[in-house]
View 1 (cartoon, rainbow, N blue to C red):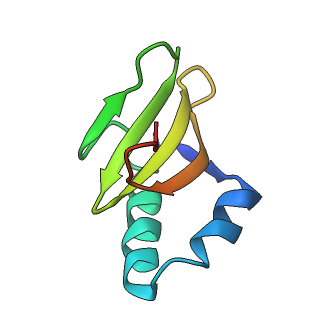
View 2: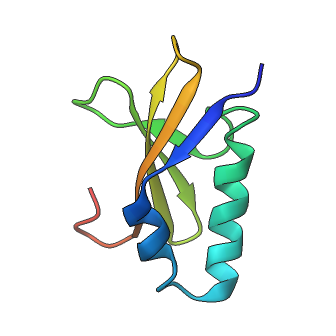
Length: 85
């Protein structure tokens, strides 16, 4: 059963500021979450119940998984720096 992926409006606004090549890669990874949000270079964030991060190049996609609803909510995309997390 495919996952329902929701993307926050803020994420779409922020992504427009990134280079086109990076935007294409990020959107591809977000689309692939419909198949399986646990695939790729993902890791559960410590101290959070259902918050995960997906490493995509020098960017991090932060999202929450709701397994009961079969839903993924992408709430942030950040360029990796020493203060990303």
